[in-house]
Image (cartoon, rainbow, N blue to C red; front, side, top):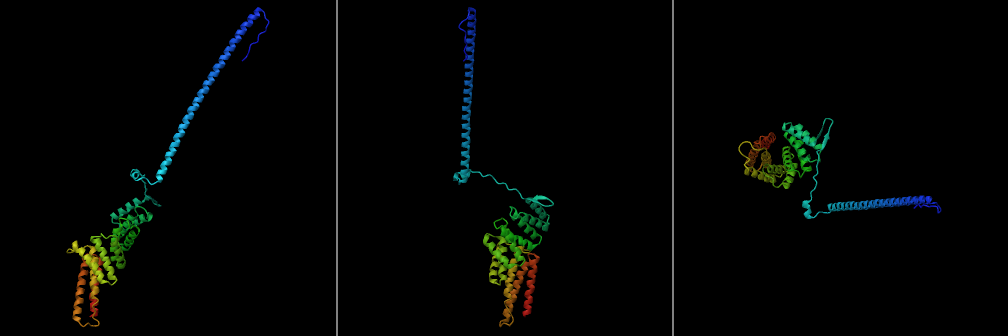
Length: 348
């Protein structure tokens, strides 16, 4: 603090002057002291205010840190819970997000499309009875997405279109491929039955017998014409192996179904019955041809009568096969009838 110094010797006027000066000096000192105190108080208030704000900010920071830490703990706990097998009660409440599978896009020099659109175009061709074009379109859809969700349908429909268009070998190859590649699909049963019919139609009797045995074991509940197709295939397979006794067993079982379901009415019969009657004719033909006349048997007359009866019985069975009005089976049956009489004439 500054101080005022006055001389010791002075006149009265000078003393009075100095007295006034001293008073003014003291007042100045008082004002200076007051201003310093006020300044000190204001500074202290600002310090306290800043300290309070700092404490508040620190408290707020601690609260935010605690919240973030709690959220991190919750996330970790959620991840651990997802990796552990949930409790049986939690399994019912746990919801899994559905997966979305997009159709495969196909880009060609001419167009950009997808598999469902290709299948739709193929169906339209089939409905227009453009079977060969429809078959190629289904083939194309299958080749582009052979492991996709519509692959089994595309392959089966391609086989069906070839079948309708009388491309039997192409249809057969695809029906068999459906059975091999998609044994658990909804098309497997139908594909197997249709493959059996084509195998017998194309006279692949040994293959037909093998597929029929596997199909019957896989689908023991087959009924109606599907069961008849299996039995006819097994009968023809045994005939091709020279086993007429086992073939007759399968033919008899098929004829029981035909009689029970009244499928052999007067006039035309279903095409599924043609292989059965043809197999029956083959059984009787094989037995007739076992009766020989060279050398001449002792009971020639009896042997001739038995052979002629078997020829007539076989001819009756072949005639029943012709009632299906199928050109293929009718031609085969007619050839066999002529062959029966030709062989009899040659031996006599």
